[in-house]
Picture 1: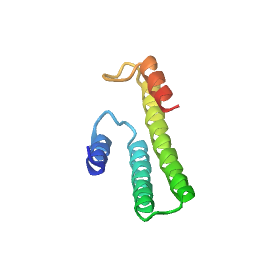
Picture 2 (picture 1 turned 30 degrees about the horizontal axis):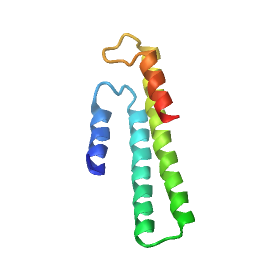
Picture 3 (picture 1 turned 90 degrees about the vertical axis):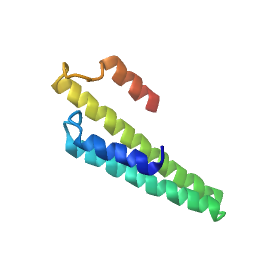
Length: 104
């Protein structure tokens, strides 16, 4: 899946009924766009032979942006599960824990 395809998935999810919080979906998409831009900077730095410290700093920024997006996805799902635990397709507490730990 290309980065453009993944952004289309996020955009589609914003209009999907499962995303009860369109503000959270917008924030997640914004974080992912930021990470995408930072990753482009890392690629450019590597291709231009930038100093390894600069590359590692930029990689760290990408990692942090992706982690924050992931945690925001999980926290949004958690809020939705607490507000409507019987909703169809709602992840179980065990699934949320597994997702959370996959980012740790």
